[in-house]
Length: 247
Image (cartoon, rainbow, N blue to C red; front, side):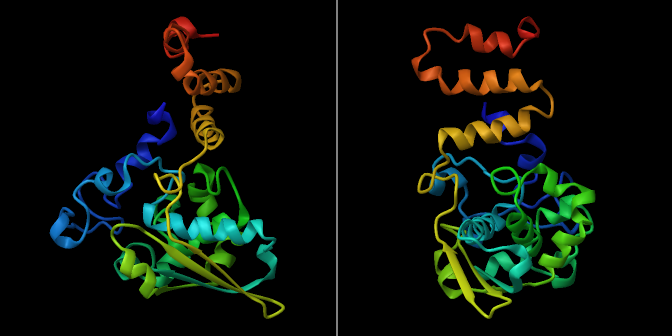
C-alpha cells in the first residue's frame, strides 16, 4: 500500500534532486550526509514516516500551518500579507530566488516553493494539497499566484534550532482588518510524533490509486489493506492487485 500512498514520481524527487543528480534548479549538488548537518537516514530520526503531501518535505510544516489557520476560519480573500518562518538551511530550497518561488515555472518547480505551497494549502485540496496543485496549469493559476506573491520567507531562529532533526515552520498572516494570526508547527505531519490517521492514509491512497484504478476498486483496496492485521488470509487483497481481481 505504501507504494501507492507515496506516489513514485514524487518520492524519487522528494529530496530536491532530479534523475541526473542535480537540484531543482538543474545544478549539481553533493550527496547529503551527516557532516553537512543532515541525518544519513531519515528513518534514524523519523521512524518510518508517510509523506502526506506531494511536494518537498521542507514545505510541509508551512502547509500544516496554513491548514491550521484555514481551519480557524481564515479566508484567502482576507489575507494581505504572509510571513513564512523556517530554518535557515531550508531557505535555499523553498525560498530562493524569491521571484522564481513566487511564480514557479512549472508544476514541478511549484513543489519546491514555500510561497506556492502555502497558497495552495490556503485554497485547499486532498489532505491539504494534492497532485492537482502541482500540474503546470495549477502553477499558472491566478488565485494561487496572487496568494503566493503575498508570502515572504524568513529565517526563524526557533526553527533553525530544531533543524535537521525536524523541519518546523511558523506562519504569520495579516488580514484586511489588521488582525495578525500565527500558527507554529514543530512536528511534521505523517511522522511518529504526528502520525496520519487510518482515515487520512486511506484518503491519500485513494487519491493516488484512482489515477489508475476505478473508484470502487481503489476504495476496496484501501479497506482491505487497513484490515490486514485482522485478516486470516491475504488472498482477497492480492486478487485485487492482479489481473484475477479485475472487475
